[in-house]
Length: 268
Image 1: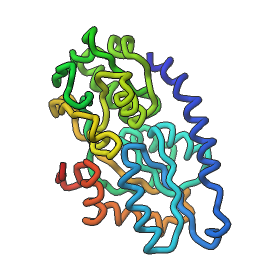
Image 2 (image 1 turned 30 degrees about the vertical axis):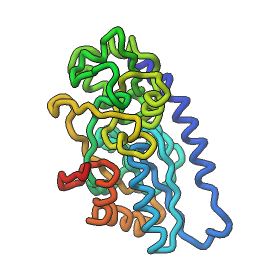
Image 3 (image 1 turned 180 degrees about the horizontal axis):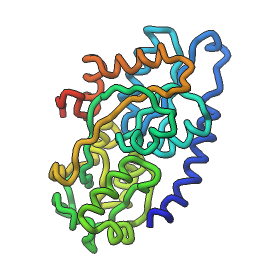
Image 4 (image 1 turned 90 degrees about the vertical axis):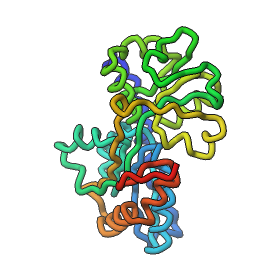
């Protein structure tokens, strides 16, 4: 199953790499500024946009963010050989790719956690039980484990419960990342998705989405790490982004977007 899923993911990685080339083109008016490139998983894009905007203003630099599935982003940065920071949705990507020598020091900026998400009002009466994903009257959409961090996390949850093959076989379709999972729920393609909890608090989702928290033994909090890339051309400024993200001001930004901060505190 995972081999077939990887064949789906590779064209997506190529697309991400092509998008990266466009993202790296400089605005002539900014040619005198240092320009940083940050790779961030989609779920973390909103808090990271605020954090990088603050650094741009304070230090007169330009910061380009490219976002996507965590694995696709790593493939893009490895292929491009350029960039300054990488923030995937799970520490598993650091463990998987660390031996390649591209990932340097990091700071911990908080945690996210997988949950069930359903339309507001939970019309199908779904509960926090994994067997809900096998109901004949419940349509599910899942993330590809080979492209996004939530896909990898979902696969781990389903494998531990012994329903991986059946759930993936009966899902409506596979998508690439957390953003497209939420889109599937909003569009009515799914009655149930597994997604990162913080995304339910994003403005485009909060009015239409309801969270069903899973037992912590089933869906453990996942640490979020902001990593300096070893080929960074501007490590001094990149470290300022890291320091701000880990500071009280940066942690408040993460809490605002539904994340649990590095000290285990949350606002939602």
